[in-house]
Image (cartoon, rainbow, N blue to C red; front, side):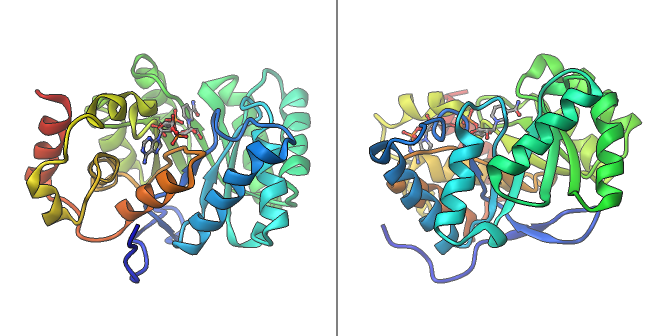
Length: 281
Ligand SMILES: NC(=O)c1ccc[n+]([C@@H]2O[C@H](COP(=O)([O-])OP(=O)(O)OC[C@H]3O[C@@H](n4cnc5c(N)ncnc54)[C@H](OP(=O)(O)O)[C@@H]3O)[C@@H](O)[C@H]2O)c1
């Protein structure tokens, strides 16, 4: 698959001004593979291609089975540990259990410092944010945030965004799940909080249907040759979105997705065209 020689587009993290590429990498399910070499080989290739194409944000969680350990092993074996922006999460109740889990994540990821630590699905948010503010001051984490994956939690996520001082919010956003446009995205922009879009391909569901159809002719005007590129460009061209984290264990899909990080990006009218073409609405 041809790849532009240009570098991927980046966006600034509002709280620091540090820039990150608009396409990152998720690890849910696809990195939960244990030690088997056969299952690991395509993931090595995905991470190597991701880095070669300018990617750096990789998102995982202690909730994802083997994913943190596999991520740590791959980054170490490829010598990429210091070149990646590693995001993980805390997903348990209680201060001490939270601290133990986060230390375990650092061990599995083989890092002394986590770039972004997020409270996963708002589990015991106030307790963990209290710890994380301290950890940030001590340099154990660089950025802090919260995540959710479901429209029904947007009210609670919005409350946390208003009440707390966060660097990042991670939320579900795609052509198939646009509710974040109503509350989370404008609020994050107003509060100066970076947005990571999870489920940017609606967990693959949107693509399953679309793959049967050719991409519209006008896709070439956006430099897109596949539906996944169109769907990802829809997500990352929202002005409040900092990056999207599609997950794949398939190196061809990874290269396909990375092309969505390159110009040109759709304007508002083109974004609606993508959404209509993809959803038929
Ligand atoms: N609460 C939370 O914090 C939360 C919740 C959900 C997700 N997340 C994060 O967000 C990441 C992304 O969300 P997600 O994994 O649910 O869904 P997603 O990225 O929207 O979709 C992943 C699915 O799309 C397929 N896919 C990816 N690229 C493709 C391509 N180019 N062509 C065809 N199929 C493609 C993958 O299969 P193949 O492997 O076959 O490519 C996989 O089944 C997660 O991995 C996780 O890191 C966080």
